[in-house]
Image (cartoon, rainbow, N blue to C red):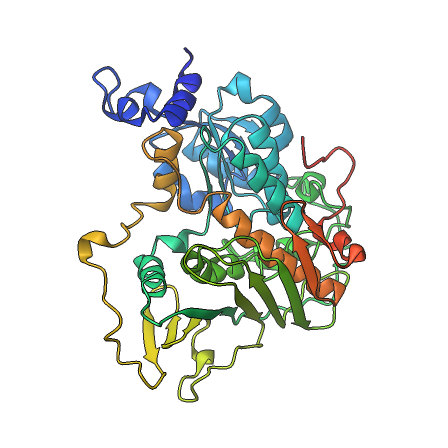
Amino acid sequence: MERREFLASAVSTGAGLLVFNGPLLGATSPNNKLNIALLGAHGRASQHYGGLKGENIVALVDINAKNMALAAKVFPEAKQYVDWRKCLDDAKKLGLDAVMICAPDHNHGHMSSWALNRDLHIYCEKPLGICVEEAHVCRTKWLAKKDKLATQVGTQRHAHSNFQRVQELVRDGAIGELREAWAWGSRQIRRPGYLSAEGQPPDWLNFDLWLGPSPFHPYNPAYFSGGPGANCLQWNPFWDFGTGQVGDMGSHTMDLAWCALDADVATTAAAEGDKPNPDTAPVALHASFTLPANTWRKEIDLHWYQGGMMPDGIVGYIDLKKIGHGAMFRGSKGLLICDFTSRVIVPHAPDSDLTYYKPRPKEQQIPPIKGFVEEWMRACKGDNKTTTCNFDYSGKMMETMFLGLAAHRAQARLEYDAKACKVTNNPAANEFLRRKYREGWPLDG
């Protein structure tokens, strides 16, 4: 059995202990390492270099020759590609086990879909695609292969223990019966429309491959004028390249609420805010969703606010605007308000004396995530069954968030069939669930 087949077998059969601790395969054995391709070799990927040095980085993909040179200094043995499609077509030749996707947002859905078609483990930086259909396709494909492939979406703030504590408080009844939830982000970056043509792409940048599956737009250096780690803010407000704050900090902040809600894809979505722009995602936005009931709570409403729009604090002495990115839960007994690392309970019903709530013992608390990327790599090798932010969990969240953007563009309340990936009450709105791709860039490639 080839080494890659052995790793895949370990995931599906639960043989992870053999991979890690068996008498024949020690922790430093070559067979205990993953063969990984970095799709996007520098930028965000550079934040993972340290954790990846224990694996085999066999391929680097980047459209920026300067970034490729920086990555090649760290991984000199890796084969270099400019076109990620060619790299994935060479998956067997390279002996690939996994890909780490750190490319711009408008490539995420395609890269993930193509990698799943080749039975590769995937770590994909957020968001999982930039439209409803992309999130839906990636989630559905992974669910058919979840017993043999590990996936993780890069909402790494989820590793803060506060996520688990908030989840426990909500589900254990600290605020009584859950009635409603909110999440919000304060960032405001306005763009009037796509940038006009200016100059020519430099020799070190393959602008055509940077556009990837998106429709053609002329080169403008302003798309690349941001500093390290923040250049995404130069292009993600535009529909063909991103989803603005929904796919940026929204991926992180909504995760605070989603973690506690144990939610499925929304059945309805409505939105208000900025006037729809054919070029850019809204800055000011309030999207509201109906989440179906589950085994421990009734159907509830979930809200997303951004760009200066904010929920009512319900109790006047709490100024939610002082929390730049946060979430709030309302129950029959009180409120729970939180950000990424802290939380507070506000009892507000006449009988909210907290005697009805008993904290779970320390030994019954949800265990911490021991390294967010490391959790994924352990799952790839079969050492644990799944990951915290896999394509099902994160895919449902992003499919819901993108549905809110579709409601905003349609200027209508949408009823949604998640199984069919279809708006059922407004056929014209279905065009906003997907996007157009250039020839040669199919989503199912």
